[in-house]
Length: 71
Image (cartoon, rainbow, N blue to C red; front, side, top):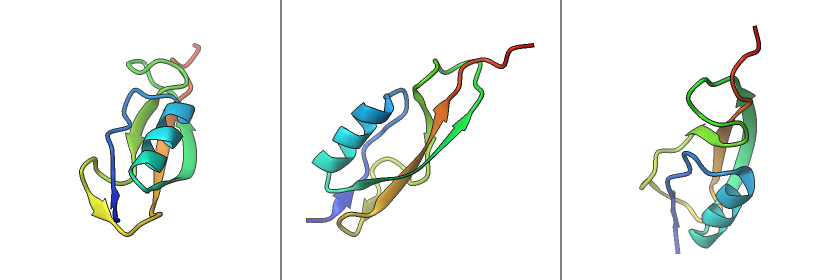
Protein backbone atom coordinates (compact mmCIF):
# COMPACT_ATOMS: atom_id res chain seq x y z
CA UNK A 1 0.00 0.00 0.00
CA UNK A 2 1.33 3.44 -0.92
CA UNK A 3 1.48 6.57 1.22
CA UNK A 4 -1.47 8.91 0.56
CA UNK A 5 -0.55 12.25 2.13
CA UNK A 6 -3.23 13.65 4.50
CA UNK A 7 -3.88 17.35 5.08
CA UNK A 8 -1.89 18.28 8.20
CA UNK A 9 -2.57 22.03 8.37
CA UNK A 10 -3.83 23.09 11.81
CA UNK A 11 -2.89 19.80 13.51
CA UNK A 12 -0.42 19.37 16.37
CA UNK A 13 2.81 17.39 15.87
CA UNK A 14 1.28 14.35 17.62
CA UNK A 15 -1.89 14.49 15.54
CA UNK A 16 0.22 14.84 12.39
CA UNK A 17 2.33 11.80 13.26
CA UNK A 18 -0.80 9.70 13.91
CA UNK A 19 -2.49 10.84 10.68
CA UNK A 20 0.66 10.07 8.66
CA UNK A 21 1.05 6.59 10.19
CA UNK A 22 -2.58 5.79 9.36
CA UNK A 23 -1.85 6.62 5.71
CA UNK A 24 1.45 4.62 5.64
CA UNK A 25 3.64 7.77 5.66
CA UNK A 26 6.28 8.98 8.11
CA UNK A 27 6.93 12.32 9.76
CA UNK A 28 9.98 14.02 8.29
CA UNK A 29 11.80 17.19 9.33
CA UNK A 30 10.04 19.58 11.67
CA UNK A 31 10.85 23.27 11.26
CA UNK A 32 9.42 26.13 13.28
CA UNK A 33 8.41 29.63 12.23
CA UNK A 34 6.52 32.61 13.63
CA UNK A 35 2.91 32.99 12.47
CA UNK A 36 0.27 35.60 13.28
CA UNK A 37 -2.52 33.49 11.79
CA UNK A 38 -1.74 29.95 13.04
CA UNK A 39 -1.80 29.10 16.77
CA UNK A 40 1.41 28.08 18.51
CA UNK A 41 2.15 24.36 18.14
CA UNK A 42 -0.02 23.91 15.03
CA UNK A 43 1.11 22.97 11.52
CA UNK A 44 1.47 25.91 9.13
CA UNK A 45 2.51 23.94 6.04
CA UNK A 46 3.80 20.59 4.83
CA UNK A 47 6.48 19.60 2.30
CA UNK A 48 4.25 17.25 0.26
CA UNK A 49 0.77 18.33 -0.90
CA UNK A 50 -2.30 16.73 0.66
CA UNK A 51 -3.68 13.99 -1.56
CA UNK A 52 -0.31 13.14 -3.14
CA UNK A 53 0.45 9.44 -3.58
CA UNK A 54 4.02 8.53 -2.63
CA UNK A 55 5.97 5.33 -1.97
CA UNK A 56 5.18 3.60 1.35
CA UNK A 57 6.95 5.19 4.37
CA UNK A 58 7.71 8.41 2.46
CA UNK A 59 8.63 11.26 4.78
CA UNK A 60 6.50 14.39 4.97
CA UNK A 61 8.09 17.42 6.62
CA UNK A 62 6.05 20.02 8.47
CA UNK A 63 6.47 23.65 9.53
CA UNK A 64 5.07 24.34 13.02
CA UNK A 65 4.00 27.73 14.37
CA UNK A 66 5.92 29.39 17.18
CA UNK A 67 3.03 31.82 17.60
CA UNK A 68 3.14 35.54 16.88
CA UNK A 69 6.51 37.26 17.04
CA UNK A 70 6.90 39.34 20.20
CA UNK A 71 7.82 42.95 19.44
